[in-house]
Image 1 (tube, one colour):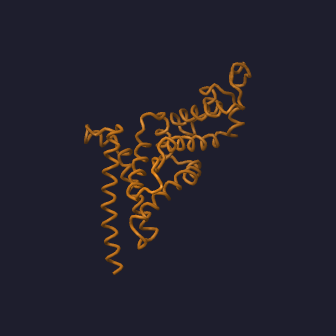
Image 2: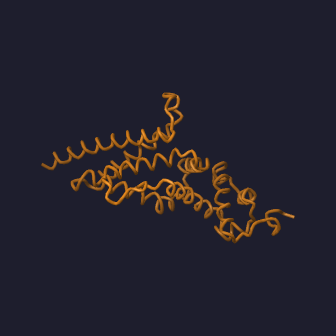
Image 3: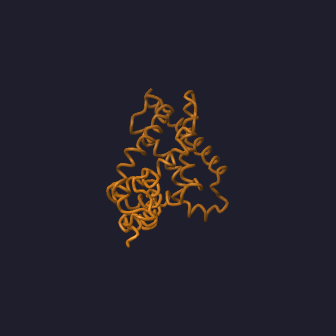
Length: 225
């Protein structure tokens, strides 16, 4: 009897826990083989679920893949929210530091499943339609939060393009340590990414960015005069 279609020895496909198991198993398989080479049958085998469970919870492989991307990002943001629990009266400088720390902690979190980072790396190299939903539902709100922080630091004399470029420059500093990690490890073998190292990087990137934004603001004000 086909173990994937058997009703014996398999969890109830309608059980919410089955959905979570499918997400975790699918994340592992998608990270290993990529979207196109992954089969739903392999995912079900690893999740100890049947094909009906995928159909019930996600409809098809493409919808499952999209859900996996959202799930991985949401898990990271729940663990390290962008404001890191700051009070409502936090200064704009404190909010920038929290945002940078949160991003770095999500990037270098050694406690998360290994497939999270590998899956996103694959998606950056070979984007799928699932990236559209991830950007709109998860990444764009985070970008808008950082834009508000940058706008608050630069003042009203800036336009949206200037704010956007400064925002991307801050994010680029954080992502550099991840994308260039193989090179950095060879250039500077002592560079590590423990929680303490991440704190130091966050402080540096924040100070560097604040000084750059301060100088940029002065230049803008000089032009306005």
